[in-house]
Length: 266
Image (cartoon, rainbow, N blue to C red):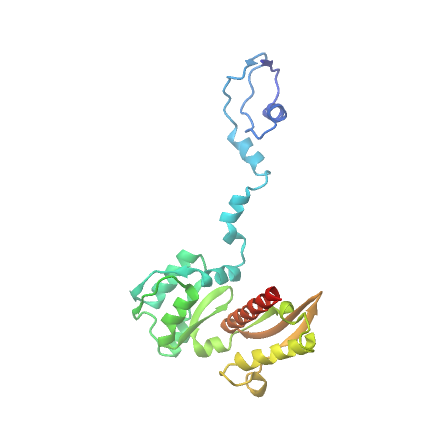
C-alpha cells in the first residue's frame, strides 16, 4: 500500500511509522517532497540526531545495566568488590608503586601508597618484591606482599591506602553490622537481648587490637559497640579499623551460615 505525503516534519513521519509498525524505528531524515509516493520498498535514511534524542528517552536494556554495574557503585563499594576479585598475575621483581599502578588500571580503583609514612618508617617502596600467587583475592595478595615489610592496607578518603601498621591503626571507620538473623529467635531460654550481648562480648574479645585481649579491658584503645534497633532489625554500630570490620563481617557470615544449616535440619 502506498501513501502520499504532504509537507510534514520528520517527527510526524516517525509517529506514523511507530503507530503502524507497533515497534521502535528510527526518526526519519528530511521528509519526502510534497506529493511523493512512498512504498514499502522505499529506503529513507534515519536522522541520527533525532534518533539519538529518541533513544535517550528509552528504557535501558537490562543487559547493559549488568555490564556497567561498577559505574553505579560508590568508590568504597568498588574497592570492596575489587578486594574480593580473584587475581593471578605474578608480581616478580616489581615494586610497591608498580603494584599500585597496575591495580589502579585493572580494577578501576584508587590505590595509593603512603609515601610519607613509608619514609618515616625507613621503608623503600621502590624495592622489588616477588609474589607469585594464582587465583587468590586481591586482599590476600596485598596481605602476602605487604606482611614481610611490616606494611598493611586500609581504606581512607575513598582510596585503598598502603601504609604502615602504625598509621593504619589510627584510621578508624564507623560501620554497621546487621545481626538480626543471629539474635531474632530466642533459643534454649536465652533471650534475643542476651544473645546480642554475648555476640558483642565475642567480638570485643576476638577482634581487639591485641589478639586475646578484650578491648573493654584496654582503656587506651577501647571499642564501644552499640546495639540498636532499626525497624525490625538489630544492628551493631562501632568504629574500628577497616580490615577488622571485614574480618568481623566474615565471622558473622560464618555464623549466619551455621544458623541457616541448623534451621534447615530442623
